[in-house]
Image 1 (cartoon, rainbow, N blue to C red):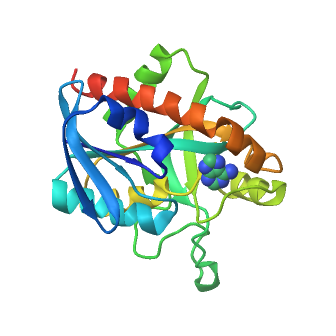
Image 2 (cartoon, helix red, strand yellow):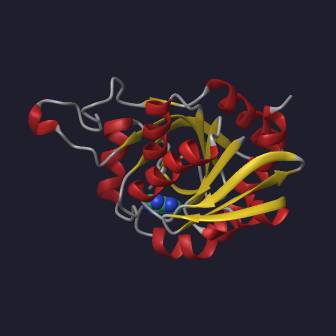
Image 3 (cartoon, helix red, strand yellow):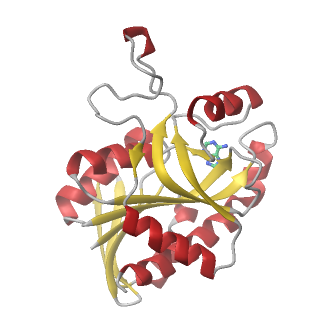
Length: 230
Ligand code: ADE
């Protein structure tokens, strides 16, 4: 069964609306909706913003629902010139830009207990996402997606993340879901549509475009789930 995580209601609603045979459970204040998406078993959940909420959610999907894959869908701020509003970032890997144990000699972003700096996404899931995005005719890029417990809204922080990690998009959950999946040997992927510039215009742009961008991501995830089975 595929687990689908979005941080906000708007990032999952369109998918939930399509699901049949729904069974709802609330765990740790998060609503898990299990059912069928175009006849395929999935469980979709809104985890709330930030890395801790996302990690709780991913671990719960693994332990309570025994999911065999997890996709994180939603919106992000762009960190590269090639991606504008409603363009698409597909993660090849993820990193936590606010993990900092440099004082003890680790590189920035390195989680002390992990043997990788950037956590790689599952190749088959990435390939299915790439096909789904191409079918939608979107402008898209494959690259590193950086996560941290902050809404990115300054040029300084944006430039810092780009310089340190070469990331193409920034958000608040993907890399913690990646950490949980990596530790549990569960394949995962992250798909993000761009809602803002992760810089000075980000708050207003997010307000204006997040809804539309989130819906586009849902459409891509729907097609992705079909392609996974082919
Ligand atoms: N999600 C969408 N836009 C974002 C931003 N600018 N920072 C963090 N997460 C986001």
